[in-house]
Image (cartoon, rainbow, N blue to C red; front, side, top):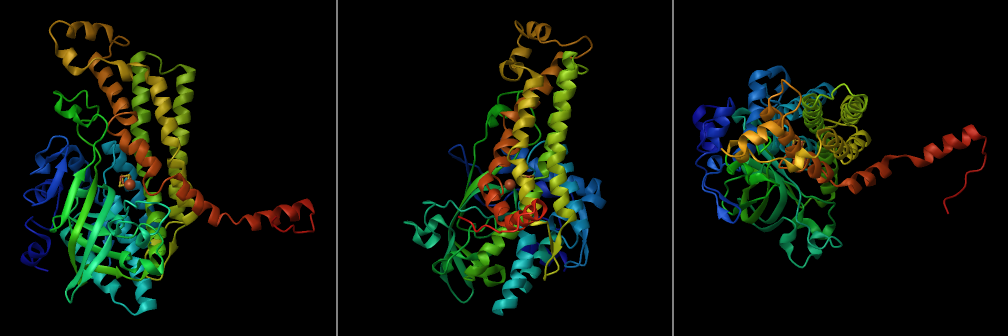
Length: 499
Ligand code: SF4
Ligand code: FE
């Protein structure tokens, strides 16, 4: 494909995107309806509160440049080396490398770097489009491969948009008082389809180039118009973005950068509203095949729940910050501090081990894609709903109350009280007071500040809330087999029927 064709397909920005600077430049000049804090944002790249989230996404390109063996992969779709975030895993080794990359990016950014959700959408669509075609005689898989090949060649960011706003949770999509509460097809013509609705909590929404939208729940026959998968450019007409507020997000514009805790990197979530957005047939990957919606949701969540290995990278940062804080206080060698650091590490590595075990025990599917073990992936994400909270609690325990009572950077710079702050916030001799403050602000950032959004609440609800994993664990726990093994060893001859 020549450069001109790539440009016309992918918009005004220069493709292929080679490095982080290209990526950031590619986001400029797009005509999008973006709102934040009640105001239209003309150029998100220049918005000081939004930019750290763009920079976190950019880190995925920096890693690909610095460590191509980790963050790129050989694709048989493009027939070339491609960014790993656009590579459909074809083996356990691919999934293992993906998780190593995610942990490394968590370490580098201390936040959600946003790009996995698109990879997991791509990975799920690869096999599900294949399976729909096999049963229904459609041609979704070839359309999807053509789209993905161009995305790989252009090295763009794809976002995966799954979560509908859902309205009355006791009712299915077609039973809602307002049909827009789940994304649905409003009309069809000979060129394509039109969709309306919304996607909620969309990670990296305006930092993406394209979005793949997918159903968020099992569908019934009455939900045919809601059983739709497709790809749209993020600057397609009819899309509106309302960027979510994050705790302490405006610290970055308060002056200085110390109080932000992590001034470089942040995550991003947005509400995306679709109003009669046109999707040409070539970018429609499911339209009405309602029976396959649950398969898509299950495969996406199986991939995405293991992607939460990202949080172990954040855990590495937070454990390091807690150890630094203890060192600044002169207590790093105290036995109870060491024990807390060991506990934090144990919890962090338990998350890692369940994610990696699911990758090593992956299974091939008919399309050629490989998927993590479903049970282990659900266990991994269930660990993520709990352990970061305990790691965060221990980090605050070690750091002390200053995490939430410390004077601001402006006080530090004030002629009257600056020297007092320096004198009375000092730690052990040889430790710079400002360095001590920086570490405490980082702990604040990750446990109750801007990046606690990603480290804690996203760990709870992202890729499905805890109950969603418990349902999947219950489905796969093979309790009858376990009971029969117990009966055998105990010498119980009679199988009791469930009461
Ligand atoms: Fe990736 Fe983790 Fe962010 Fe999800 S929460 S997009 S897995 S970094
Ligand atoms: Fe997520």
